[in-house]
Length: 192
Ligand SMILES: [Mg+2]
Ligand SMILES: [Zn+2]
Image (tube, rainbow, N blue to C red; front, side, top):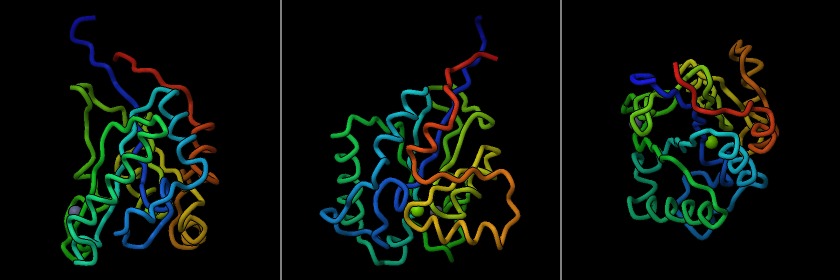
């Protein structure tokens, strides 16, 4: 109907420790490797009808540990690995700030998160944020989306932290992105 808005579901996916192996301030593109099942998981998420945004804190840039050129080379390497696998990412969002900058875009801040795509609003209740750290599930909390923790990267440590430090009840825990992708429902844009 005229005037109806299409609401789209999105998944905000962390990069380091979730899609690629965590290199700890990654600056060497040749060392970038995909985590097993990451590509398969992203592919299934797309097949199920979700937009995918990669959202990553890269404070190594703000700390002066990663140069702009090194950051770009690592980013290009990630893009080419995903392209070779036939994965289309709908957007990349990076925060380069040092934590002490107290910016609003460093996860779990939501400043970088798009609220629409192709002029169609995102449906937070149907969306997810996933990663290997607590800031990733806290991002979901701040978006009123569903938070998912994967046990790749620093995920095992984060699971311990999750149990001891914060009383989240809504976090879903998965071994990797593929296990999460199998769990999420099929999604198709809907009008409201
Ligand atoms: Mg991570
Ligand atoms: Zn920032």
